[in-house]
Image (cartoon, rainbow, N blue to C red; front, side, top):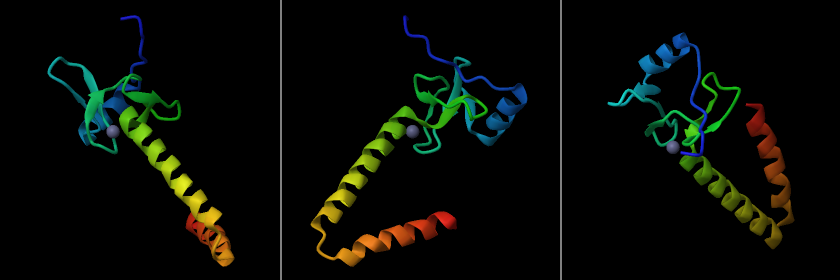
Length: 108
Ligand SMILES: [Zn+2]
């Protein structure tokens, strides 16, 4: 056990709230587990399974690392497809539309 993972740490009131909401649970060994907000799996609440995020009350990301890497893969793939589409450049007008619709989308 050379690798030391950061455990979720938070005020007990916050933990109690998370437990009551089902975001956290204790497994049969009394180990704290966190539920991934994406795949809904309960995994040990430490940085081996969840990336660290200081802005979160428990110091861990909401998604497990599996979902995180899956999301990155999908995002990279989506960008690749977008690039390929732009490279085709058959209809120059189409290039302008995403800029407008993207801005509108973010404003809402
Ligand atoms: Zn997950």
